[in-house]
Length: 76
Image (tube, rainbow, N blue to C red; front, top):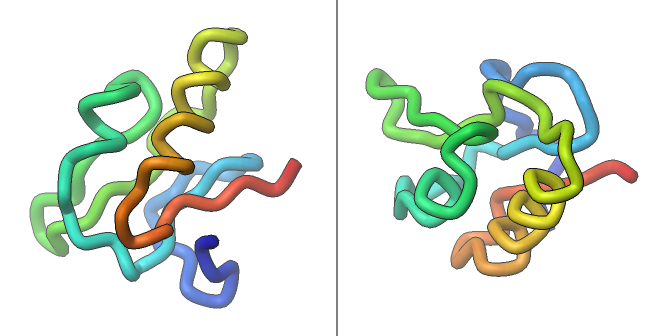
């Protein structure tokens, strides 16, 4: 599970977030590109829009469960 102490500061406020242990694998961006994007300068993904629909929430959870570095967290 992602570490709240290491949250990527680019994340938009909300219950989903990425921490700085992201390995830039692109999985979360492939699964739900409406929620996750890439910081080209740092080579990390972050949450640029919190999921709103049931589908987006389900896909964000899928991305979190599939994240190989366990860099995605959810408070809620």
